[in-house]
Image (cartoon, rainbow, N blue to C red; front, side, top):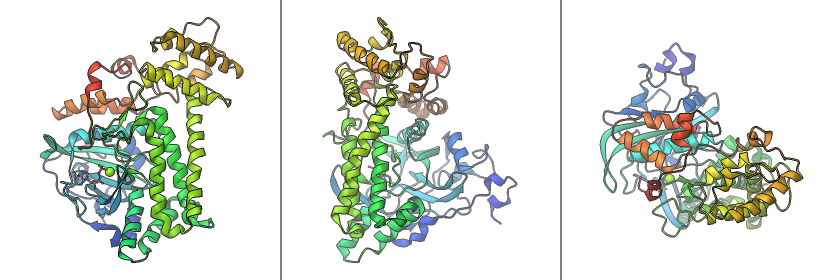
Length: 508
Ligand code: AMP
Ligand code: MG
């Protein structure tokens, strides 16, 4: 009987099916984590722990030894750590084998939410680390932790984060920083780059495509079972991944999220947001905003993300071609992106404007608003949130929203069209407690993870105080709620001047 079966609490009798391991050794190298000296807790996500079915006191129970387990110093029975191998295109260029150089897969755990893979990010070198140290720094680990849990709070598909642990272990980046480990959870961490890896290497070595087929069959069997019955299951898989990716891109655009490094190795086969590096949420609206300081060409600028998502799907299709065989079928599957993305995006914009009916001119109404917001550099989140208070009554001042714009006349002209549009679907109530406002407040968040907020939490954490990280997590888990006055004052206002000078790069 293992330790976890021996404990009285049935909630911690964990079982580990570890299905990814059944793919065989071409897909990974089994190895333990490097130990992290003298670890301490940085942050935990009670919400993620609940998802995994862990008991409330999971982090502090002596019998679970979670601090050491999630720092890489110990393991729970059933965990079978490994590093998986993948390749990818970085900034549009084939980069060959990339990883996984610092994410260690601990295993796949049966949870109330179904099987969930658990990973440590920053647990030391693997055979795929290339020149890297396999470590992650405290700064980027807190950003990933808060970013993924905030994204979940917004209702957007994402990998989850259970906890961050830290250590005094020095890690060299531009300066010397300290090491941290993030524990992440997802139904699967398989990326587009896994498919590209086995497609490329099989062609190169003229070995056939046994591994590629095994990988595709694995993903279909466990994550896209409906594709099995299609005439060509691999085309069906491509189409389903295309649809999920299209929906994800629409989700990102609708909350002003910038991923920052949309390389194909950072694209999830499940359509999850994955690998939070130099990401950011827009403050002032600028469609050309580049959140990654290392992205000098702006390949991954906010407005380009949907096209890059499509580009990345072509790379996936290329990887699947040996199985699909017929390029017309692959192209047809990819083609579904165009309407799926456009429909998904327009649906989200309509919801953000509180519109329930569909009119042909809605796209124009949205585009014109976005154009005004861009011209006046309006705060993306605050502008949409304030829109819930819009009154379509004749002569209504709508000062709270109007004040967001420099060009008041242009806003007034738009507001007139918006009021007429609302009237056409009989949505004429002026009061913020109306059904329309309530609906809008469920899609236009009051709280998002702004760079400067993460920065404050990181500075405190670097000084040994983790309370701000935990406080911010709590706020970001309920981003649509009004919350109390203290949270509103601290987190829902305009960013300070210094927020604009924050630079986030690939270095993590
Ligand atoms: P990223 O651009 O962060 O997605 O990194 C691409 C790949 O490089 C990752 O999947 C890792 O395998 C590898 N990598 C990044 N940083 C490190 C590091 N510090 N040590 C080892 N490998 C790394
Ligand atoms: Mg990555």
